[in-house]
Length: 418
Image (cartoon, rainbow, N blue to C red):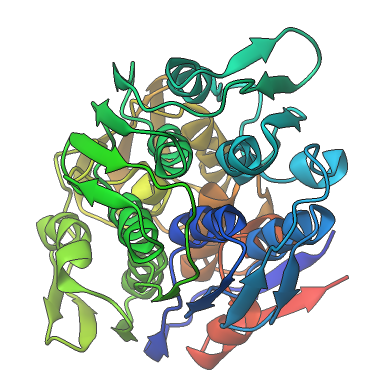
């Protein structure tokens, strides 16, 4: 594993362009398995998780051109196996998105326990229940052994939680199922909408994308399609925080205001000047102030993927901020490392932390536990006095393209070691 050495105390400023959303790219790549025709995806993020997903498709018999670039060409004329590579599955939670396409193409799927962030705390119960409604049988044993002996059948059901990947799993299966499927309590995130629009381009009939009720008319044969991914608002929000926490300013291209509005609402509450001119998202800090309370929520609530970053921002804001992430507890645990940097943190419970600022942070040895808290610790190190070392840089690079180059391009004094 590599280490990022950071000399803090330098303002980051400049311009960059974000690529597509990781959480859109993975389900769209999985959707390509549903068709025997070529599919083309543009503005794909050049990150490790996307490469793993592409390797999984190659293992299943697909032709994949453009790995490591922003354009992927995928054709899967024949699916040669129903058990994806166990080692690759163990590196990527998004590998669960292969279940629906494999059931559609092969009638069976044998998927090992998925990896990724917090694998032991994140179940796929919602995914399996959705597939069960469509005629899928689940066998006991290590991993997930699934069979659809009579094919996938359209059904009407309620998801027990508005899980993003659970909704995407249901959509991927429903697009190839016989008849109509209605998914209630569906996730509404932009990347779910992107998947709906891509499946529509492939020939599926879909109504209600972006709402809690999505209706899908499955088709027996899905055609090839092309899609340019929307820019990643999570990555854009991360860079806006990195600039603000160092007292810098940034212009970010490739974003849509309808995605960035939820990010801007919290940054503005903390006195960061934000605006979108239709092309660029501009962020300029003033004297930071506390937000009072920041709570994550289902879309269009504040995304959990950014809660670690704004927690770091709160260390530099005047007053106390209560940060509440009701979804994942381990992200906040990871941020306790900032106490050793001089941050004033009070961990109320696994889901809530009180941050009082402003406090001058000091450089420290830090450890990335997951993509988002890892990026948050990099932001803390950039604002700190002295040198920090953030270990397991590859963990963060699973979600951030060309991370070291971009930090250096914004004026960050950073270097990769190892």
